[in-house]
Length: 317
View 1 (cartoon, rainbow, N blue to C red):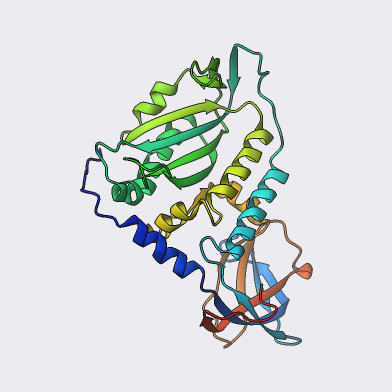
View 2 (cartoon, rainbow, N blue to C red):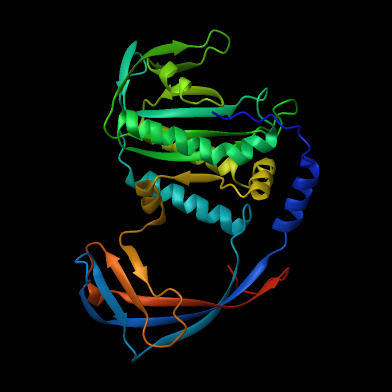
């Protein structure tokens, strides 16, 4: 389906240097925060959710400054770890089989995807990665049913032909399918893993390169591994290459399916719509979905007042 072997003209050392210069300069954001008590609630016109309006009396106003979240800075790393910890704390543990079992079954996989360097350039790998994953994900859902997933994108760090190429790892939970597999010991490394019988089927639908598939024995073990892997792959230092190329090509370092993303963000209520461009005229309005008690809610409106580059404000965080 895809075929584009351009000559690699990327100046990766320059991109890395440019990124490091960018990320080390903080942007200070000045905000105004208005807090409204909820005054009126009613069923929305379409019968889904609640329409909530801010009350005009007792509005609380305050101003504050923060360091902006930038790919790879301390704010970014803290937010990433909070999301990972929330997901770990909510998804229940499950062990699918014993490590001594020869033949096994399970519904969680750890998959790795790479591009074929004979057919694709480094630039291709970063530009095509999202479209290729979305196509493969759509095929997975059509073939096996609903899934939850957590994707980590990474640049190949080793100096050589694959240097800088984008590849990614995915933790996938299959909600409507269970795989059969077998125990495997690598002859060179002696490492133990469990492989699915349908590996060739998955590989044949990743048309741009190579696929490695392992079965997950323990849910919490793979989430913990993902947490360690994600924190290493998306924090400053050794991960600067991944962060720099992701920044260059505007590709996220990681992504999650909708359900896991909501869990990781601590979201219990979905805001379906709002007058998000509210300019202070009239009252702010939101439509929410979920089990909510309007008497316990407030509407908070943040407005960006100004920003300053390359300066630190006392108490910003």
